[in-house]
Image (cartoon, rainbow, N blue to C red):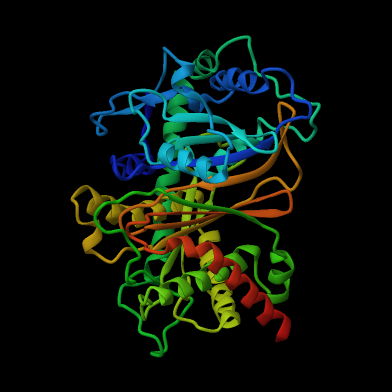
Length: 457
């Protein structure tokens, strides 16, 4: 049995029937023209064999009802029809119908009695297109790891095919690799790294300012200010609203011009959009909303599991000037990244655990909405392929991340780059964020205003 990490345990503890905690991706494919007979059915049959190449597809909880004693074990009775599902949209197939189906699938928690993943293949879209919605529990994988898994399936040519190993199941391969000596070595290495990481964690703690920072009082925007008025849901939690939109924005040149990174530009754009949304709702707080930015600390030899830390940075929703907001974001993230770079991967993981611990305790005791959250809205930028990709001859047109909202964090802004375009996804709770459907247009407006400010300076 593989022991659950604190992060795995946290993501499982934070989940409830109203708060699913899986990460997902919606992929839109254009089928080859002409498509082979029963192309989609063959794609479904092919997907039912994913457990032969992804070990994570065979992992399940040993005791779903008692997480204190549970660990990861191998599924010995894999049932593909429980994990790969096939739908057809009513005609004429509309994007709205697809999003409604995905919303219903996304808000349903995964069955903890079996491996925590599902793949939904959806046909019936116009233009000879087909969709695939894949969700995996966050306890099993993080965003970067999920992208790596997906990338292993794709090819860069429509004539190439990914080959599934048929000789022996991954379960047996993995079991043979383990030995008592290897297990003892891994345990000792983990304890040694944990001990060495202890002195590194306090370097981040003094940067936390637990005193609310009022605008105009000489606040250091490069510090991490945790308290902020929450963006959260009320009663009737239902994370059913998803806005998906591709955009071709010259963010790379904007980043060079501003002296920051692509991530800085996107964060500033999101901050501007959130400010406009809150103003429209007559709900703009004096203090800035806080962004939680997941940062991968994954090594090349890491496979499944979560290997991430967090940077906490203001969205600077209290800054009216778009250019100044970007400059403040750059200063804040530069300092935060420098601090994270000076930490070991283990210390970075410990920092994440330290940030999550209050949220876990407050959530399981039912008090998460009574305390100002450490993070108001997650912002994640996951790098994807810069080249066009294909799956069994079908061209991947777009790839949208569909993520998580929790108590106190009712908005999740995630971006995936693919084929020279950005695929934005807004996951939110419509009962907690009225008018959230406007955020898509507000993102575009925020981009235009920031672009104009950079060009005119």
